Image 1 (cartoon, one colour):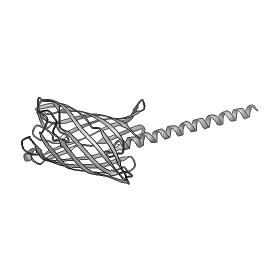
Image 2: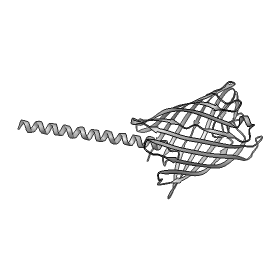
Image 3: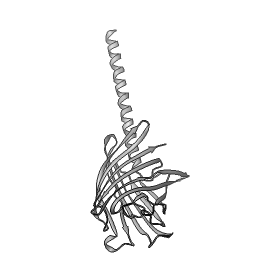
Image 4: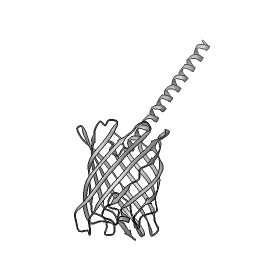
Length: 273
């Protein structure tokens, strides 16, 4: 009788341990899947990223905060991924601020930059290769020192794949000015390669530099090319998943007043369905 009770107790303990391990494995799998989904720019998920940049160059430096809310809308077999980009910059000295909106050269400036809207159509049930096609619209709402005062529009496209632990992609965009009171014109290319490698427990390695070409600039000032990498981790604050990331970039090609380096810290709030 005593032996039966001991065997029963041992069996119950083994079952409880196996159940706990299964629950842990399920939670780890869900965390890994959500981390990869967070790294997909056209994922069908509401998110609110906050980016904090520190730029430093020979002639000046800047601190830039950017909010980038993403709100998807279902259109049957397609999703419309609505992305809004609004920066606030504080610059000391003279520095060319790299971004997706027009890269202004700021001189002792503080205030809002121009607002960019990006809309991507993407399959509701993507295959091994994920694509997004759409357009970008730059709205000149920024302060006098940080706005181009020009409306710009152009196509945007994205190709992405997630083999194994990898997230690999490329975002391409070009905008041209078509109206506004600003001087000159805008013709700007943006390339963003995306290279992420996911590790256990929500950690990942990342590099997603924003490369720009200003086709209206002088030959020596056309390209802005950062190279670098960093790391991120998916965590939870209460019930809200949060994607934290820190990345360092060095500029191997830059315009006259471009930064020598940039440091990014990102906090992305996720609201999965």
